[in-house]
Amino acid sequence: MSATVDSWPQSIWLLRHGESAGNVARVAAERAGSHTIGISGREIDVPLSELGERQSRAFGRWLSTQPDELPSVVMSSPYARARKTAELTIAETPLAQCHVSYVVDERLREKELGSLNRLTKQGIIAQFPQEAERYEQLGKFYYRPPGGESWCDVILRLRSVLHHLQLRYAGERVLIVAHQVVVLCFRYLLEELDETRLIAIDRQGDVANCGLTRFELGEGEDGRIKPLLQTYNFVTPLLEAGEPVTTKPDDAPVQHA
Image (cartoon, rainbow, N blue to C red; front, side, top):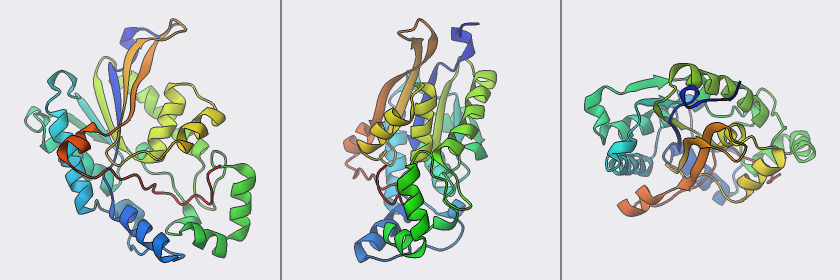
């Protein structure tokens, strides 16, 4: 059966979280040539940086100027940096008084790095040379670190999120606040990409902190009704607010596949 207007949300907006303390620590570690990233605690608890909070508020202020496009549902990764981004965004909009549906969903969490967590590129090569070799052999899309996830693993859990959106939020405007790999994997699913095309998009540059990717419901070239990409890595809200655009990834690839 062909998809209909009633089987998808009217819009799916994907927002990467604001700059995190982990992003800042990774930059410092790499500049210093360190093997480890100087941040403690659980990955889920890593907070936004001060700049990340300002970026989140700037996006929220911009969103408040788009009254016809305000989301009716906000979904967030459970990670602190994503939740805070969502909360600060909501606080700057009329949504704060409208009791918008706000859902935290564990399937939107960051790609898990397992044993490679908190290591820089240099650290991975020094401490896990065999894993660095496996990464080069398999490529970014299929490589799964010990105790962690591949991009394919992330895609698998996001498939169920899309089914959830169709089941629960058809016809609504949904804003999803998550992570760089999650944004890219949603593109893979919604645009029906393959490994080569997804990695080509990734090579063009990292998803910016508080960079917005917009899908709106429409008729595709194949005649099917589905979410269609409108904008990718949209950072005008930050530029208009005079806030720096930051793009450091959360993971530590040994190389670009």
